[in-house]
Length: 247
Image (tube, rainbow, N blue to C red):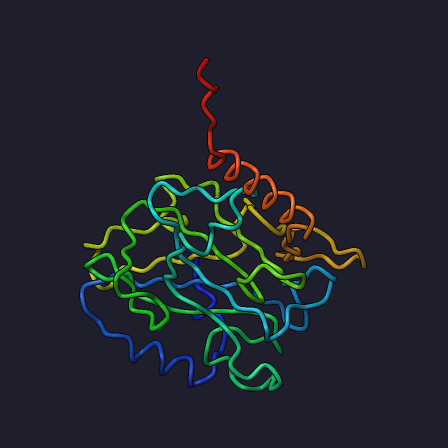
């Protein structure tokens, strides 16, 4: 298995304390993280600027049977199950020690969470009612807001090379794993972008690992056309029928 970033970096004591505080029931430990290169930013927004503190990172999966595509963007949020979240609680303080997993000032995220024996998540950001069954595909959703407005930027990526031999593939593991089993989901392993892009170069020539993209918002005229069409169909159905006069 790859050696997780959590073990390769000297992390702030606050982050380590949070890891120690996770309940140690029968569960597997998940490390999920981006790469870190001292002085380099690998995560960029649609304008080619390093991602700021307004962005959040979530790992999770979609409801059974739902497959995210460019055509069903409106349905992503309704079918999304959050397994864990990283964000910057104090985005204006680059030295806050990234206690919430995302250090915008340093340009990397790292979190630790448990996949519990009942197929749940130990994360405080997960819905206790959600389950993450063995074999479900894991996605990383990066966003500044989930609302579809003109300034919305998203990236939704996953590891498309999930193979049985790879112990750190992006799928939820067996919930019966013993407590000392761990997995590492690294952004570097992602190779499929449903939105946004991976491993490219910004317009300014800066190489990136991940870049978000603006989310298209339907034009007002499109809404009006759909509304008028629907109204026309409704009126045609309700138009009274007149019987021909008797002779």
